Length: 43
Image (cartoon, rainbow, N blue to C red; front, top):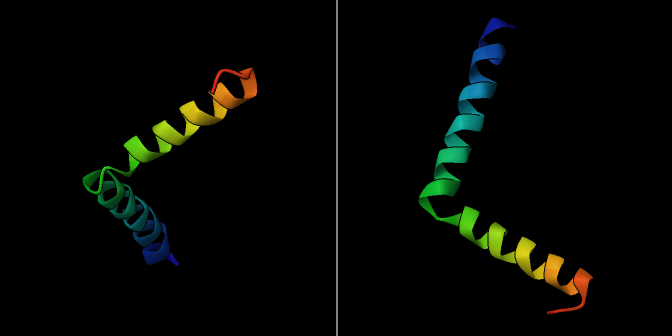
């Protein structure tokens, strides 16, 4: 059970770093901006 408490956070950090390396945070930010502009009626 103890290895799960160590393995899961390490897997989460690894996936987070992988997403940052692929610059996926920029894609998510762009999509969020587009959705907000559509709600306001500008985009």
